[in-house]
Length: 619
Image 1: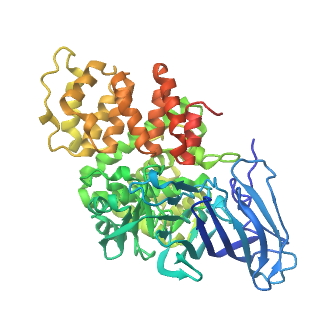
Image 2: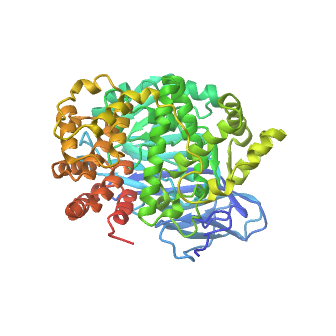
Image 3: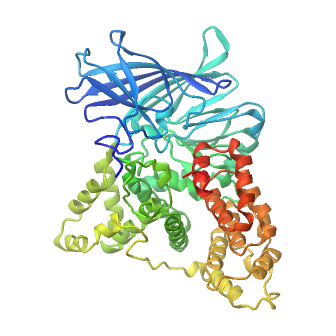
């Protein structure tokens, strides 16, 4: 069995139980020509027990020198990788001569041009084609390629930053933006300053720079993007303040100051990333009708569940994501009504079923555990819907068991209040659950839960919820009619069937058709396109479910639409299942591989790495 990289985190060499980073002052320049960030990481350290070494995580960083800031003493260091893992190395700094237990080390360094945290884009790859573009993605363990740090979610720190970049670029970070000033001696450069007083784990450190503009969304929110998208984004995300207020009503004050959004280029691999003060989002949310803006409710929820209370390792990732999905759906219930929320939760259950089936089929069944063993595993490799939807299922089950939403909402707020600013384990969460629900009746209920099965066994949860799908009944009935109707008599359907039907329900209609047994025919899928024109739909969630259905029935004429979709955006939620589906269809397998090889240069590095596995190009 693989070894853990350290006693406190299987994916980090750092030893915060000995010496811990307590704040960061980052002072760097962006070199768009060399694709490098260079400068200084000034790390304030607290020695917690007697130790002659400070250990940090690095990945492909060039460390030039390390000095003790208080005396300018040069500190010896070395870089090693004792476990020979491909996702990080160990920077060991000798601190035997440092006599105080609180001190600052200044590390002069530069990143690699292939740093896994950074995505560099040429001007012609951007919407405006005027300037290059840079954005970061540090979750799960990529911050170590951006700066030397204790790259574990168990360590949280406030930070300040000064970032120099060409004055034609706007620089944004996961912090409150303080302003800009000219660089002395270089009129073409500006320094942008940032400050974040709330401590964060390293994976929430984020930076972006490009030809960006903003529009106001509310009293504490802006949306940023290239000018070609900014007005559309402002329309799409106009409900941001309403979502923030709903979250505050449930969980308490928003402590981060600004809540901005940045719409990134299409290569961004996720739907959203909850970077403090500025959520990064995919342009696939720009449906034109606000139908996909619910993702923002998820990212807002992370301001409490994930950012304020954080999983201590990525084995406990469900604490972040399960609670966030749970809170997200409570917000959506307040905004759209409980019937909408019930359908939304059912869609999530279907997503979980698909993820579990896919992982079992690909030999990744251990990752279907709610608390997986990540020794020797890059957390990116274990990423799936499981921590999100299996985590939600557990919390939803406990809410039902312990008295319903009125009771459980109070518990959630108490949970946040008790653990805010901390990183915690699943065991700490469970201990608090037991201490909060302390009556004998509640203790008996909690003791009836099969905790080992929920937390540590593979596969679907031991409890299947019974969602109220009355809102979806018309589209489920329509799906049943399509399934039952003979292929020779399909003219009874018309575009009016789905007129004024929400995108969520259209997605439910297509999902229902996809799960019909026996599988619906190719003739019916072709008729679906003729009647409803799904190939022309802009909504990315609908397009995704539709294209998977087309691949399932092996409709050759749909393959170009699939390839266009995976080429125009890099969101892994969409591209990985579609590539897997194409790989499974032997007739188009090489076409899928050839397309991937032609496109990989413009894809995000994380997407490339995981698609190589999906397409069996690497082990």
